[in-house]
Length: 223
Image (cartoon, rainbow, N blue to C red):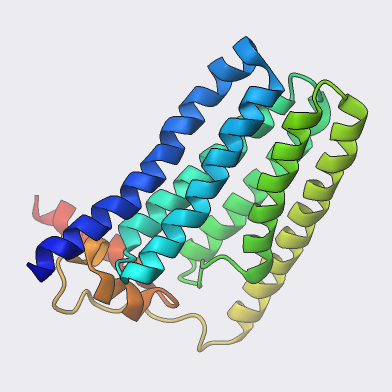
């Protein structure tokens, strides 16, 4: 009964994330058919699901690496699609997209060097700022001047996030204790590592993603 309830909670949390993914796919057709106001309303819904899935995972104690990765990809898609839409009115919004790509590259390089890739406090704040800025811009369209000023706020936070991640990477490389050797998967299978709340709680702040990568490689070699 307890296992069934845990699975139900896991399904609920990821269902909420999936609602955001569905909303993301609706952004482009909604934008060109009904304009910024409709997209702004949909973005509020998407933004609320981003808040809700995280809170539910914490309350139900069912956070997993699968859910964390799924939520992160949904966040990136949410931001990328919205910024791409803004280029229709403000071509220089591509600068914000470039900065987001730099953030992704930095995180990937940290992952490649077995460093902690967990979002920093500033990175989390940046995502909230991004959501609020995009919603305000949507409601202000087609007032491009106001939109440009609001987008500048997001660009400032993106630059600050890049600086913070670069500093974290430099400090981590200097500290040999931060650059850990990849541990074994212990008694977990790859499936359990992806979907086990216990595994997530144990490794969410260290090299959990590297463990998943090593586990996947072992399975591919066996096959």
